[in-house]
Image (tube, rainbow, N blue to C red):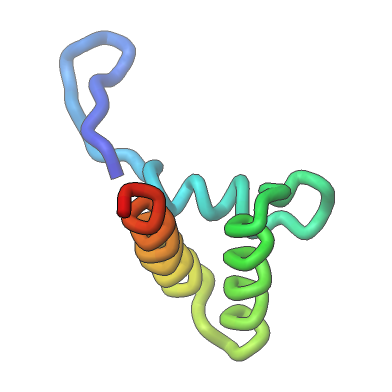
Length: 81
């Protein structure tokens, strides 16, 4: 979610977006549009397993983003040390 101003500039409101949107557009698609990296493929299979298991889509997206943050942080710390 992010705070945006409407076109007239008179009103601000919260609109969906951010990490959930990233998961929806880059990780969830099954076709060639899925992120073609090692982490992208891993996260894609993780989300697929969650959704097959009956996890609600929004919860699966949230868990995917958490797992992505952890994986990428681990990769970063390995590169630094």
